[in-house]
Length: 150
Image (cartoon, rainbow, N blue to C red; front, side, top):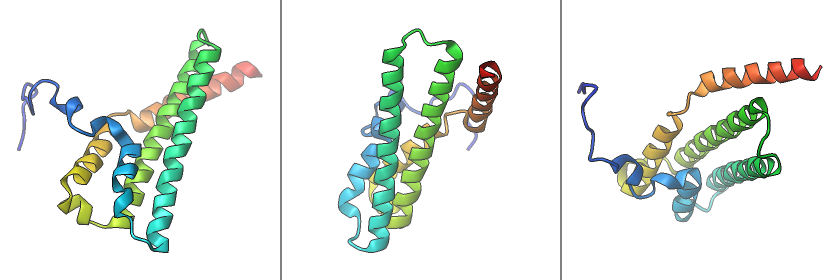
């Protein structure tokens, strides 16, 4: 079905106000924790997903601490920090989606509406980034920083 540029998909605010939308990867791991099987493969996927979320949490905390320590940091440094943090969030979401679907198979995606919605929302949210374009911008900033640092 083709929708025109003025087509409305839902009422105002529906996209951001759906239950669980803001939970992201951490919410998906928490929501699915009870569904993991007690076998080494499933548990390894759970461990990997949890580690990804914790690494992203540490990155966000480090970025917040850097901002607090230097609120007027030069714009190139602030941009590098923002791009790295956004990329880590993107990697984390992808990792959680991958590990969740590999561990649980298609069942939750087809028979558990809250899980299916979380997976869909997370994938859609992450794809709103500029992905490789952001990484190319980050690469330019890294080169500029390296050249300026000597």
